[in-house]
Amino acid sequence: MRIALFPGTFDPITIGHLDIIHRSLSLFDKLFIGIGRNSNKASMFSEEQRLSWIKEIYLDNSKIDAIVYDGLTVECCKQIGARYILRGIRYVNDFEYEKAIADMNRSLNGEIETIFLTCLPQYTSVASTLVRDVLRNGGDATQFLPEIVTESLKKKI
Image (tube, rainbow, N blue to C red; front, side):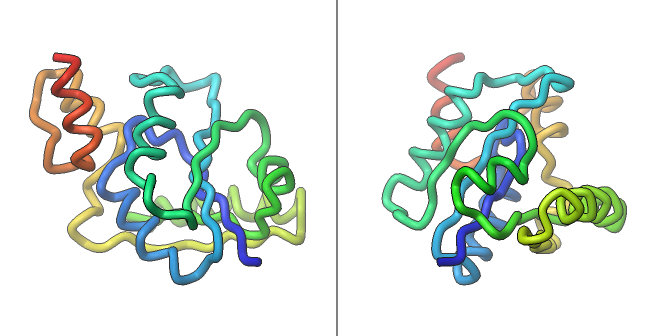
């Protein structure tokens, strides 16, 4: 069984993330979306909220599950039986950064491969960091977010 982990903070999950997830589904039998705890990043949304959004978006898709994990991504892979790490690439500098992480992960566990998918051109500017800036400053981020996230945010206003 081809099991993959798509790690990230997903703070919030964006249409760019959905693009990578949807296009990867033919490659894997099971995809875990892994919300990694990063003590160096202050999150805008709680882990529970982010997990809830992802589970709601993929409620009807048995190939996709979502988890929250601590520590090394390769250790999470081991726990869920994943042999692949999925990463999305927007720009060349994303690749350089992600390749360094992939090389480190391969050194830690040579049985886990990192798969890179480039995002479609219309999503290159969609980054959670930028979306958070729009939201913090009262802007309309609807065009960058899945409908479930947008509806959830409207209820909180």
